[in-house]
Image (cartoon, rainbow, N blue to C red; front, side, top):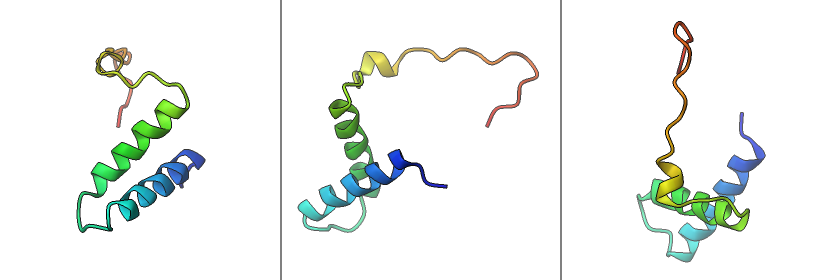
Length: 65
């Protein structure tokens, strides 16, 4: 199931791809660029320091993906 956020990222990534002349490959590059741009527009911290914040360890016996 797609979320509204996924749809926004997909639309922005497509626009970036078209602006670049619709090259083959590099789809993840455009997806990640779109994610960063939309996060910055929303005022989210996209710095490397924020990305390095450790996630809590789930309790023992908890199923993870």
